[in-house]
Image 1 (cartoon, helix red, strand yellow):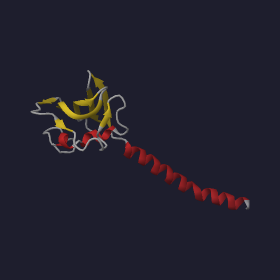
Image 2 (image 1 turned 45 degrees about the horizontal axis):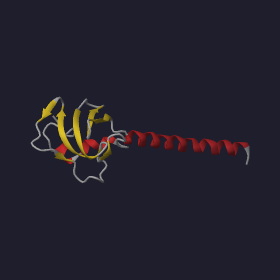
Image 3 (image 1 turned 60 degrees about the vertical axis):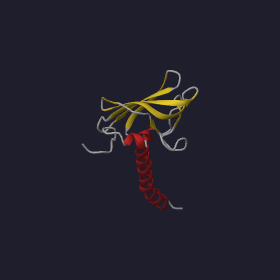
Image 4 (image 1 turned 45 degrees about the vertical axis):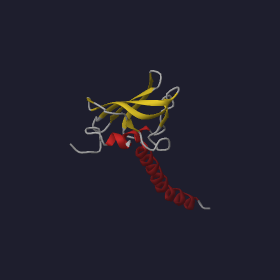
Length: 136
């Protein structure tokens, strides 16, 4: 292969490298939940979850009660504060379809691989003032 053919080939691959890099960077950003989420064991059988959106500062704090020992199987919201407003829960909010869904915390200690899914707990979205997707 001549020197000019190699140079032309190298130049032809640079846009591919740039495009590939762009898609990788975009994919990593898309996986980012765009929020700060802390999951911390509390007491004998609870998790305290604090979530703050990086885009608008929307904040939710909740306590998830766990049915298993050692902060395991945390599928019930027993205390909830949204935007600083403490919500009076008549009964715990069931974290539906758990285990199995991406928002199911199996262990407070281990947390979640993609904790941004916690924003999507169906029962949480139904509580007035706790749905970060609603306008106003």
